[in-house]
Length: 422
Image (cartoon, rainbow, N blue to C red; front, top):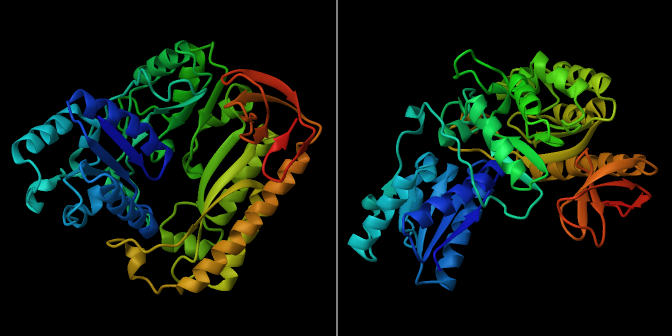
């Protein structure tokens, strides 16, 4: 074997794992498993550790390298694991030189590297620029692919460890993004998804400080053959006028937005150090729905944030209907070491678990409502595989015998509780 990459966490990690595999193999690494970790919850870190132990038991002959957000924020913990041979920083993982240094270290040391020598993690806060990564074989054969336009975050929400794993916000220049989109389209990918850590902070570090809305306009203007463009998770408080114009005026931007809402209670939002109120979220969704009436919203919401009472939780639960959410991503609150929220009065684990369950049930009811409302509609469905496609609104569709990559006009006749049927 050469290099296998095991990915935890977000879509951005999935994109970066492709870069890691390419760079590590080009550096000459062999018989290596790379764990691209996530730090967003304690459970995500625990899953990475469990995976490391299992993989080493199953394949004792391989070397294990850990990278990603958890490796950046908890490098010593991973280095102390006997199964781990090297810990690579979250910025260095995208650079071929880091993997060449790893190969040299392995060749020189054999097995039995000292813990202190395992760590190759630089100061992520010192990183100021971001290089574009065009992957010729990225998700080869898949109709939907990701283009990373931004990394890092300048904000400091009290629950979030990610800025310490990703560093400050930095952006890929617009011209480079347009070139990547055009190249991927020429290789046969039908749908492009723009992704990043804090997408709506895009451009603040670039000359002229272009915003996400201008980037989307440039892509759609300069790549007219692109038929389907998506935007991954955004912070609605930073959405600019240009992006609203694109939502209203260009059907090539898919009518689906995933919002970073986190809570529906104003006091909890303040304690989270979020920059919006409940009313801001509700008004934003209403504004966008006026511009694009068929829009589908997804959202992240945390259950059981420190000091959250039952009444506060009820306001988060009610936000699903108030904003007209369809897709809910529920995070049971998990205290991350070093964050302010970890020092606040905590809600009991059992209460967090129950609230997360109730919130997911509310989300499931909202999804069922949307599935039912789609019956009788005609949708443009991107065929993802022989058995599933996605509508413009990111609704899954059960299909059979179609060619992946095609976009088909299909009449929705029903649903099976999880997917639309045709």
